[in-house]
Amino acid sequence: MAAKHTIPNPFLLKGYETPEYFCNREKEVKILKENISQKRDITLFAIRRIGKTGLIKHLFHFLQKDFHCIYLDIYSTQNHEEFLNQLAAAIFNSLPKRKQATNNFVEYIKSFNPSISFDQLTGLPELSLQFNPNLSFEKSLTKLFSYLESQNKPVVIAIDEFQQVAEYPESNTEASLRTIIQRLKNTTFVFCGSNKHLIHEMFNSAKRPFFASTQSIYLDKIEHEDYKSFILKQFKKYKKKISEAAVDFILSWTKRHTFYTQAVCNRAFFLAKSTEMGVEEVQLICDGILKEQEGIFYQYRNLLTSSQWNLLIAIAKEDRVYQPTGIQFIGKYKLGNASSVRRSLNSLTEKEMVVEINTENEHYYSVYDCFLQRWMAKLNK
Image (cartoon, helix red, strand yellow):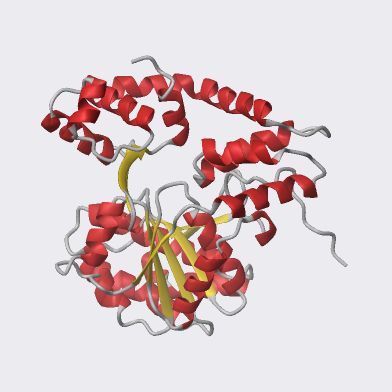
């Protein structure tokens, strides 16, 4: 029997290991599976660092026996050619690690002049293409997708930061994608995004090509008790101790925002001894994290106007601001007039330093980066 896989620290900050190092999301996985089984395309929205990519990798863990699973992150792409390169590379990387499989794909796309190199750090093969400028985006896409349509298994493609296609300089990107995608019979898409305004506009505006074409799923934070149980279980499994009160503090201080919760737990786990770690020790860990990043945080002041900086501090001190242009909030922090605050707020939202949360029960603004918010809340303006 093979030895059970273990890792030095169960609180991952990047990548995906196995389900035992992944917290909950059972409801979301079930919904995603149901939609994919019925060949319904999906829009998955979540604010950054909430665990969207991890959820996709977790989903693929369960689908990979019956589906050909492909993941690509297009956040860094700037145009059609870069998108096509990312897509081709993602298909290539998803193929079985057999020479025949990769050779077949390379042969299939030989009109794109594919070249294979090897990553200097990982030693893994990388694919890059030289697209014929005379070949349209639609024809190039059709070529790549037709390869997937020919596969024996059904295909699931998750495209992360999909809202990026709306920023491409070329016209009709969304229309071209929609036209081709709706013809596919063997491929289901999960369109992931973190820019709420753009994603909502792309899939909910009757003027846009992807209007009403997907099932929408909003990825919220993990429930407190579920996350608490997961954290305590991981400490216990490695024979380390942490008090329930300390875990409650972590979840409150990080607001259950996955990346920040994992970051604090990662440190706490590393420092934990045979004696139980308490709240005071966790507080010191949190203070240490803020101290480490202080230099970076101060640099933000040089990137913002004084009005934006002062508004950011005010939002940080309030944690949640429900009426940012209200007289009470503006007066409390001496922010000037409502129109000036509105301009600063729009700018901070565009820079993704402030996030607008709009749920069924609440509508408020908060500082996007949890660590930055905790640091700014302590500042004397």
